[in-house]
Every structure is written in structure tokens, then in C-alpha cells.
Image 1 (cartoon, rainbow, N blue to C red):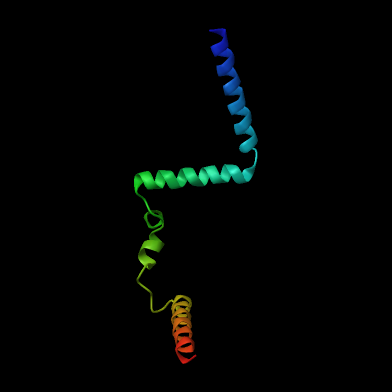
Image 2 (cartoon, rainbow, N blue to C red):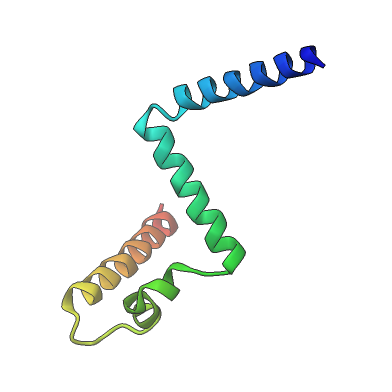
Length: 90
């Protein structure tokens, strides 16, 4: 019986020490928090659009008055056309 207590306490102390060492770095704590948030969102079946109404409205519906967005789309379209034309001509 005493041997079980020693083994259990040794395992607990080792786990606490390893956890303290691992989570002593800010990067590791951020990774854990990010993973936890992703897992929670997956369980709840939520997306980023559920939390940010602007994203839900913006997707697939460009505003004709949004000059920056339209120029970005225009540049992207021209890049693919130019890429295709260069490869077909060579």
C-alpha cells in the first residue's frame, strides 16, 4: 500500500514539474489556448463568420463603392490572365 502511494505521488510531482516547465513559456501557453478555442468551436460547430457579422456580409457580396476591395479583386484577376497569356505564348 505504501508503495502505491509513493508511485502515485511521484507521478503527480513529475506531471506537475513537467507541466510547469512546458507552460513556463508564453508560446506554449498560447498554443494551448488556441488549440482549446479551436476544439471548442469545432464541438459547437461555429465558424468565424458566426462571431463577426462583417465577414458574413462581405463574403461573396462586393460593394461597388468599396474601391480598395474592387481594385484588389481586379488585380487578382489580371494576374491570372497575364500568367495564362505568358504561358500560352511561350
